[in-house]
Structures are given as structure tokens and as C-alpha cells.
Image 1 (cartoon, rainbow, N blue to C red):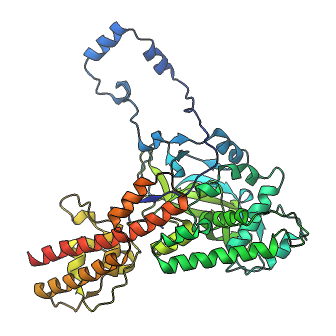
Image 2 (image 1 turned 45 degrees about the horizontal axis):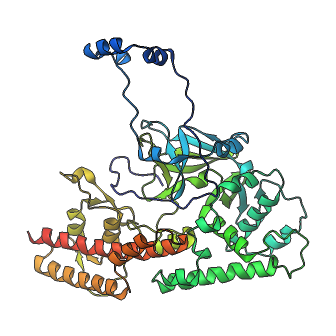
Image 3 (image 1 turned 135 degrees about the vertical axis):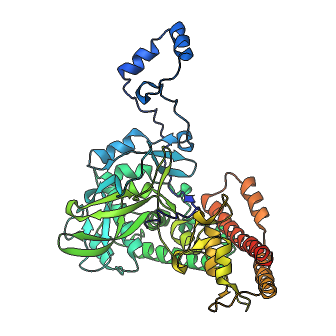
Length: 488
């Protein structure tokens, strides 16, 4: 999850999928005015004009402070004070960041400039006691220990497969935590997105799944919905005799809990005492960090204190108002992100186009045109090699370098005429893929603009197919640029 400090890629995209149910408002925090600030405020107009006419001192100490510049984050609403309070009284700590809420939900933003350091810097600490955690293998452990030994909910959890049904198990624990008096999750649940605010395809209608224009993904989501519904009917349905309180009277409630488990869960290896286990964890506050393929933060388990740390990458410079992001998962295509988290990206460096023809372009030539360096699994844009600012190369071009069929044969140079022919064949195949969609990218944009109040799942489905088309179009453009360079 760390990034190259010497040659960072130029692409970065953040994805929001966090919302909450309250439209809370928090006024700007009160800051103590220094003696210097008070005295400056009491200066008369005449004194001010004489100060302005005097030359600016060369000593930084005596120079007037520059006014605060607005940042994109300053336009977002600060989180409700209770959001911090419920965690702070339970030993959660955050340093130099603030949570804000925009149209796409919560995000964490830098509250001050952070200079790069040679080591990673902690910005958040969340103790184990606040988390909902269940290990993937037996003997499975659950923290915090709010369920008494022998509780009937153990029968439900033990009936699942620890390695494949982790989301169903976490959903049960989440619903149980919501029902426990004076439990932290009762309070934190107010800040989680409601079913209407979720983009998870588990909550999608059949119409939404059709709008994906991806039959495989739609079929996979129907199977996921069926699996969750069957589990609910077996364990929480009103006709089933239960020894435990019925935590989900309606299937929609359980589907929502599963969508929370899937989209907000962090899979991590943790050590508790001498036992090291892979665990599925719902970690409050850390789950508000949004995704980027070029993140500035990462997670670390501090086993001595049984605590999860969020750290800024070593050598990373952060400006006030920058969003704090993490990489949810490496090496996955958009269809996986859509299935698990309910979002996609037009610049996913791991996306793939399944070319079926025999045409191939020269690998080293293609990489050199776009100043792409590194091994195939770690391609990045080497901006140091570009004489001018190159805004064309992004994650989609990195993905193109991985997915376009290429050839490389020692020192044999490419033959321009053959390269041009290969480019033409590859572009034709891309055009055929675009023609197979029932709408164009331009039409998808118009649809999104025409339905601003659309269901979140429908909006996510249309964005998914739009991002697929934008990726294919970007590959066509990249091949055009390559063709011009190889010929001239």
C-alpha cells in the first residue's frame, strides 16, 4: 500500500461510499485569540494605513500572517461534535485531521499542512474495544466481548462457514451490537448510511442490475442477494422459533447489515497475545476513510496496545484540506469493486480488456511513449522523464499498458508499418466492444444529469457502465498517440 516516493504516479481518484442519516451541522471550532491577534484587532484605521505604508520586515516573525485560503474541503460540512465525542471518551484518538460530510458522504481531511517525514506518521488510533472483529478460522474470536458465553446467537454464527460467510457473521454481530444497551455501536450507527444512501448492489432492484450492462456482474449480485435472503429466512424469519431476540424482522434490514459488513469491513492479520489470526474487522472512524488507487495513508495493527493505527505514508506531503485516503484492495478490476463496495473508477490501474485478436504492439516502445516504468505488476508513470506536464497518463493508461497485447523480442526494433496495422486492429476490436453496449458514454452522462434524484444503486450502476466505456475510449486514444509517435 506504500507508494513510490521518488516517482509517484500522477493519477489519483477518490471514491466515496460513506453516508449517514443525520444532517448534522457543526460551527467552526473556537480558537483562542493570541495577545498579538487581539492587539492587531484594536489598531485604528490611521495606524493601519501607516503600517501598510511601511516596508515589510525581512524577519518572518514580524511579517503579517497571510489570510487563510479556502480549500475544497472547507466547502463540506464538519461532522457533528457527538461523532468525535462518542469515540474520544472511549480512547479513540485523531491527530491533525477532521471529518467532513459532503454529497457523497463522510471523509477525513487534513486540518493543517503536514510536512513529509522519513517515517510514517500516526493520524488515528482506534482501540480493539470499539471494533466488531471476528477471526476467519477456528478457534474464532470476537471482540469486544459483549456476547455472554453460551448465548443462542453462537448457534447462528457457528452454522456459517468461517471463511466464506464472513459478511453474514459480521452482519449478525452488527445487528446484535445495535441492540445492546449502552453499546458504542448504538451511537455510531446513527452516522452510518441508511439503506437509501447505500450504493451497495445487494440493495439494488432488478432494474438497477439490468442497467449495469454487465450480465456476469448482474448474475453474481443476484446470487449474493439470494444467499443473504436464504440466510435471513433460515435464522431471522418471523416463522422461525428463536432463542434469541429477532434482530432483523424484515429481510431489508438484514440485507442492509450485510451491505455494511461488505463495504466497510477491513480484512487484516492481527495478533492478540500469542495468537496470530486473519480477521474481518468493522473499525469505526477508520471506515470513514475513502478509497484511492494512489493513497496517502495505510493501516497498521499495533499488537502491544491492541489498537489499529492509521498512518500517513513516509515522505508524503499533505496540504490542509487534502483528503486522507487508503487503498481498499490492490489488483482488482472494477467489477469486483462494484460487487463489494458499490463503486467503480474510470482510472482503475487494474482494469482489463479481454482482447481476442492476434494483433500485438511493441511493449518497450509503448511504455516509452507514455514514460511508464517498473515491472508489469508495478507499472507507474515516471513524470521525471516528461519535459512538460503530462495530464494524459492516468490509471487507465497504466491499465492499458498491462492489458494491451504486446510483443518483445530482444533487441529487434518495431517496424512502423506492422505497428500501425496492429494498432488499427486493436482499435477496431475496442470499437466493437463499445458498439455492443446499448448506450454510449455521452448518453450515459446525459442520463445521470437528467435524474439527479435517482436511487443511489441506479446511479452507481450507470456510473459503472460509463466508466467501462471511458476506459475503452482511453485505450483507443492511447493507441492513437502511440501510432503517431512510432511513425514520426
